[in-house]
Image 1 (cartoon, rainbow, N blue to C red):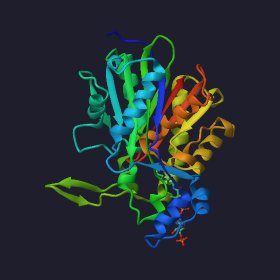
Image 2: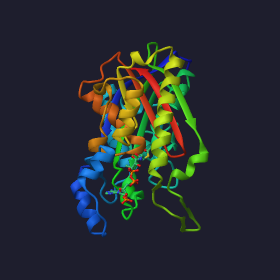
Image 3: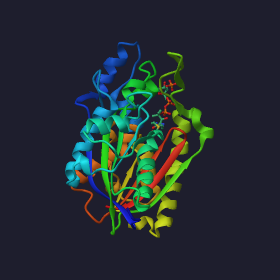
Length: 327
Ligand code: ACO
């Protein structure tokens, strides 16, 4: 295979498990644990009205499979044509093998490289950047990039400040070698000094769970960091591509919190209707949130071929990044 100038998204897909849990459902769920919450508190602080949770026995690879099938169908490709699979997830099916290899087997294909990327809520942006580099270098021509999560498995339902924020789901894109743009520029960052503000500080050792196996977050610290790095990453990726904020047709940031998203759009002087929002119905699906939102915007006819889209991720690690592309 030879190097090519660009990689380009040729199909998108998304999948949410059927069980929708509204904020009012959460009021009941937490009341059973002696905790109070309300639809008004959750909506006002986060913009979230509902999220979807998997049933027992359903794993990230199952959600990834559905999203992948839809993305492949949209691209007009069969699984056999895929020559690279990357899954971004922090909730893999197993310690190993990777969820990407499990997905590969479920797709009924074998042979192509398949691996996971772990960058928490920035995972999809990281995976897309890696795939873009591999395609442009000539190492792959038709990549399947997936963000898939079952965060409901790592939530502490006795911690009302975190458990109401997250949901399960998967989003996928097919990314192909192209002479036309395409991904224009990518920008990735991490700062491990902030690992403690958003983490699941547990592990498996000697057959035992060591440490705390559920999500912990310092919400205010995350909020402050996220707002700053999202603006910086946006400006850096635009500069790399020789574009300006006026060139952005659609902003699709990580869907964690409507206040962070609105703040980013305001700083980039984008009209509110240029911001794609799915956090209201999906909650925060971590690595799945950006591809799920992209798929929703494509399937609803908002994002059109040739339009310029800014994808942004931010999350645990601390990690953040941006991908600027002409769709
Ligand atoms: N229902 C009702 N009351 C609640 C709830 C709840 N679910 N959770 C907390 N409260 C209460 C608190 O106990 C506190 O009460 P007090 O004043 O009597 O002590 C009050 O609400 C305020 O609590 P804070 O934690 O200070 O609330 P804050 O305004 O910081 O909002 C939030 C919390 C929404 C998490 C906010 O910090 C935030 O948006 N952080 C950004 C982080 C984020 O979005 N994370 C998502 C994952 S990270 C990522 O993906 C990048």
